[in-house]
Amino acid sequence: MTRGFKEKLGEGGFGTVFKGNLRSGPCVAIKMLGKSKGHGQDFISEVATIGRIHHLNVVQLLGFCIEGSQRALIYEYMDNGSLDKFIFSKEGSMNLSCKQVYDISIGVARGIAYLHHGCEMKILHFDIKPHNILLDENFIPKISDFGLAKLHPIDNSIVTMTGIRGTIGYMAPELFYKNIGGVSYKADVYSFGMLLMEMASKRKNLNSNAEHSSQMY
Image: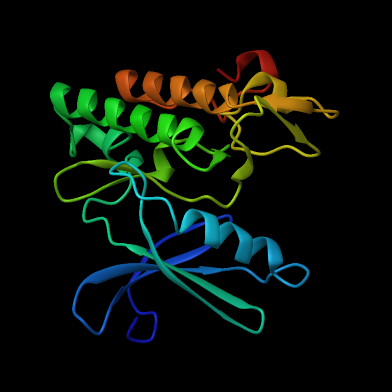
């Protein structure tokens, strides 16, 4: 399917993504995850839930495989890759038009709204950022990478957290505290706001060279 894992599409904190082909022909993205902790029950539960999601602006999970400690997720293939390579491209070599930026913003917002209010279980993503927004051949955005996602009943507005989730530069302020306690879906809304600012300014919000925390943004 992957031809010996020759074509690498990307790599993140939860695994490496390779390009592959189904026997029926279509291209797919195959994400090889790191070693599973415990017996992988959390992974199975998450896949069973994410696998039922069908929305234009959420990447579709086509299948999965577990063999020993190895786990793989099979997603639909996105021709244009991730959003970050367009908004952070050097010398504007991969510019998006104003209409494309607008349409992508609306699409991501609709995807987040669906995760929060349109599923059987409320899904908090906790890692909305340009790298996790994929673009298909028509530049339709799709939210991807649910490695940090947390599921809870749709009628609960607050979810209890025991650890930090997210990427610095996109995390809501309440996620920085050691004793987090309750966090709402608005953490994703904050991350979406940071994403919008980067799309508008075409530069990263976070200053990685800052010497003090007050200079980070």
